[in-house]
Amino acid sequence: MGRPVRVLVVDDSAFVRKRLSIGLEADPDIEVVGAAEDAFVAKRMLDELEVDVMTLDVEMPGLNGLDFLRRLMGVRPLPVVMVSSLTQEGAGATLACLAAGAVDFVAKPSGPGEAEGEFLTTLRSKIHTAAAANLAAVRHGIASGGGARLVAPISSDRMTLCIGASTGGPEALAQVLERMPADAPATLIVQHMPGRYTPRLAQQLDRICAMEVREARTGDRLERGRVLLAPGGYQMRLLAGSDGVSICCTDEEKVNGHSPSVDVLFTSAARVLGPNCVAVVMTGMGEDGARGLAALRAAGARTFAQDRETSVVFGMPKAAQAAGGAERLVPLGKIAETLIGMADPAEAKGG
Image (cartoon, rainbow, N blue to C red; front, side):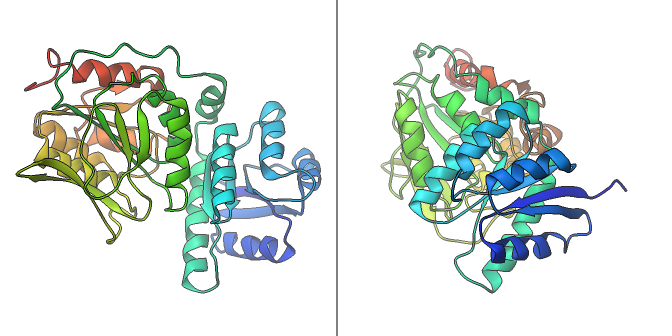
């Protein structure tokens, strides 16, 4: 067994620093090597200590978490997990931190008890993921844009694009969607993220995309030029009715530890859309989406997954490939092109 993951905790609250330190070291494979009350102390500790992962508060006096992260990633790239509040302002700042190079984030619980236990369990898991993350992919994502926007194919209105992502997903999604043409096929996305964050993510993506991007609602229809993002805390699936296909978002149990779950959307798409779908599993931890992508491929859909080199975490794409769901692996910079190309009826199975 290797040495524990060495963690630096950064938070302006002494109570939170102590709570995080004790909670993290409940895992024998994590060692808290330091706790800093602000960015300046954190910088000094980083110079003096061997640190594998840093947890970083978003809101701090003096130099806030976002500004500190931007400076840090330019001179000393390090896996960072943001620890943020569940406010709208906290959600917006957290998404900005992900764009600046943070690997992942965890929302602080609003109160003690079971929520705090779940929070610490999640944080420990994400620290292990961050320690093994492909930091080169994170840095490449910051430096590169999405490239030129693609020209829309002449494709059937029946085609639908489905995307699943987790760790590293928000920035990867931005790079894919900003290349999509305004009249691209209807696009459905599951990004593992709490409910307070998905509306802000949809707004951010909408600002940079030619397509309309918004959070999905029950009853929504599949329309060309529209991207629907699964709302955090809900499962999103497709339903077929006499008047066509619609979205259904329900408050129910997690699947594969997630709500929304990629498998829930993908398995419903396999039943409802069959060959009239193109789907991709992108960067993320775990196996969510593997079963659903295999079901889609078996139903005649075109399927693929993001490659190892450009994934911040290769867990989900690797599982999708192992389950036989991915026809091939594709680098991030080619995902938009592949989605559009496979959606062309001359290329899509059964189109």
